[in-house]
Image 1 (cartoon, rainbow, N blue to C red):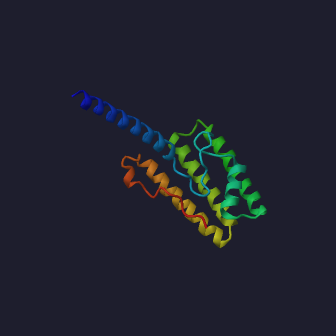
Image 2 (image 1 turned 45 degrees about the horizontal axis):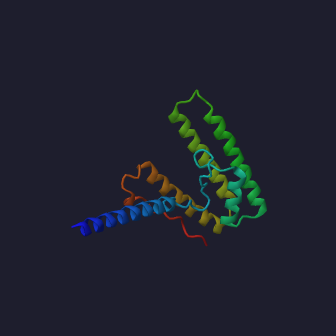
Image 3 (image 1 turned 120 degrees about the vertical axis):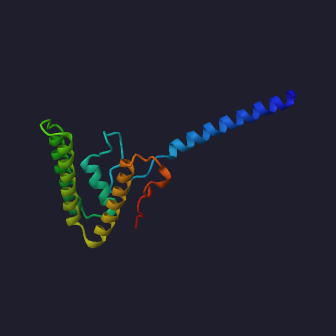
Length: 157
């Protein structure tokens, strides 16, 4: 009897320590990789990175020329400035502010896309589609993570 109790305690201890280690391991791996071109969260508020860093990341992902990178950086700086101004505008309702922010973001994306060659545009479009799918999953509240949209970024070429 004592042998069975001891065995049960050891088994329970192993289960507990194994599940704790597994949970800890999963917590570290639960972070999704950002899509190519989407700003990862580096502790800057809601995952927005510095325009210079964002342009450099896109330069790497899309193989931008230095001229393209410079223009993209200017677009991102302008977007950031407009967003900051809009964010501090308390005369607008939250819904109106959100709508204008989305318009600014779309205009910036359109300007960036216009700078790209056809191959870069294809990669850009894939990155944007992945981002939209991922955002859709966040807005659904991820109530059923198994049915969330594709959570892996598009393959890099």
